[in-house]
Length: 122
Image (tube, rainbow, N blue to C red; front, side, top):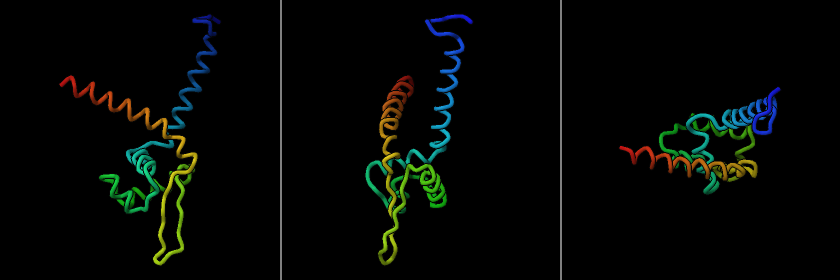
């Protein structure tokens, strides 16, 4: 076993594997074109279905419904049904869903910088 930078090679391999697994798990939950835009929409306020449909350009009602169900299963979004006439439904981020705020903020920052870098070269 060789030592490199004070870490045994197998320790670095294990750390690398754990990092890859953790990021893969996160991406599995947030994958696709629509989940992050839905979460971002709900970061600004609790919303009814049609409000989110208007916020997220290009999403279909069928896709929004499917993605909301996935986000609910993963405990990121909460669906609340109000006993009104007619019945109204509102979606909100759970406390767990709100933990993505920092991650999304970093993605926002990186994306804005990347856009400047790439478009600045043209």
